[in-house]
Image (cartoon, rainbow, N blue to C red; front, side, top):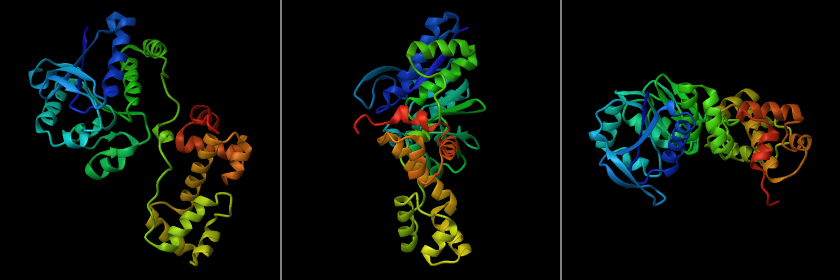
Length: 320
């Protein structure tokens, strides 16, 4: 059985969003011909379309695609914001999706699915850098910025760029089992299941900046002194407030409780120490204010679904 995969692109798309999944499906069919994937690339107008990096690909016009599609996949790219006003592109994505067994997006291609109404009342992910924008623009979408990909019914979304490969491997595993997906991953020299989520690639976990100057100063103190006494009583005293009032005001102005903010700040400090130093784990735990390697491990599992050791192996700077 042939499984037609249509990847939708547009001027300024991210080439890797198309090429990564295409190579996964192509490799699967090379290893096992009966997998039957046949990849096509389409665009609103058809013809040659130039990616953001200057590479040009030849595409089919979407309006000319009337036959059913097994998998409709929409690429992302730097030009997605301006493509949201492209009624022809959005309309064709919506139309073809109704004839597809499943629909998927890579990176911020999720915005195009949302604009087509395909993510309403669904859980979805996108690149961590634009997750907040997606939440504010599409209130009916339950945006989760950490997973590398999310399946909600017959709609799949993936996180930033290379997560399209993770998603495509998951689709192959769903269609033909993990043995074929594992062989594809080995052939492409990638993880079948990458450890952790995309938050491990992001910058410091963000909180809102308080409106109050004393709380902004306190926030800076917490970030600069992770090993200090950062208990609620100590912080409330430093802010000159009662504990109850301090907790209420801090939560209202930062979007998280003092305890949660302190843990996140300490976790970010530990992450930076793992990346830029060779300190043993007990020293990292001590200097970041987390206290012990056991706590360090639990915090990493909770926030990034990986271990401190694995994070260091993957992200430690070689220029120290």
